[in-house]
Image (cartoon, rainbow over all chains, first blue to last red):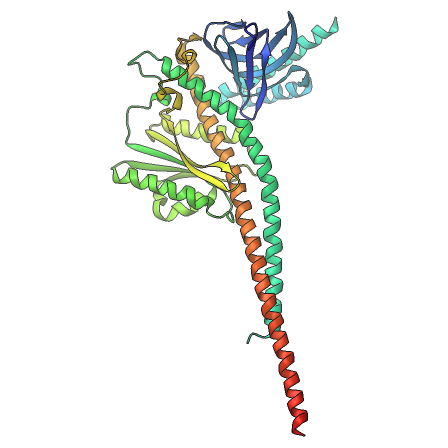
Length: 142
Length: 295
């Protein structure tokens, strides 16, 4: 195994999405983004809805959207357990907007704290999706 | 001697039964392929989730109890059995195996003086438990996986289990389902969900990285609070997928046997039909000949 690379696995409940060696992975931690290089100290972190950037040779080679989840980091590997994950370029802005509307509607209709929290989570995911799409558009624009 | 018409009717009815069973076998086989790959695709997530909870649990300082979902609430009085079966029959011993396992478990607990509650996923399990343990059944989920198993289904069941636990309705939860081994072999499996019982925790010779102290971001308690309900959902999801794949495998085998039996029966009936027909012709000939001789 190449010691200058980090083994990165991204799994969702339905399938294993990514499993490969990369130079660096930047994940959206709940308390701020963090980058993982080989030899990172062991860490378990919550992830907020956002984008995981994969770096190869100093440039971003892939961007993956996750709707929150968990990351487990050891010196050799990084495992991300995501409830929902997809490449950013596959996100459709219209879908994300639809989710945002659904979330807002659910929030207004919510009558318990639990339902409200659930709706808030949907809104947060939808907003993060939109932000991810926006950022991709901005990056490819120049 | 059975008359020819009766035999003809029976032959045609066995023929149409054979058509039905062989069609069901084809359907089960194609569903099995999909269900199997879904079950296999879900394994990495479940395994890694379990490992993560395991390393968090191992990471807890000695003597400190984690959240109730992880270490239980200290009691062992009321057991919840979550029994995963199918909604439909015609799949051999599939449901009976799981139910028998559940009954054994329930009887063990009852004779030890514990209380039992049952949550059924799948109609067949409820039907078979109703007579003996009807009063223990809390609820039944039906129609799972009709349009392919989805994670949302598992979330629903897991949320229910969590709620029951928080309301103090039970102390220990055990999941009973058929694990998919191969198309012809399904293994009834018990899996304790609450308190958490991972293999990695008890395993002494785990690799060093697993036992290294992890940094937590945010606090350990917060991570566990988010991770544990999802772990529960993941375990339920895995059992649903395994059970669904097993069901299709069991049905395929059962229908294969039924098709073969129908074929054997058809051969036997056809032979009898031909013999009877032959005997009738011979009888008529004898009658004609002896009639002619008498003249």
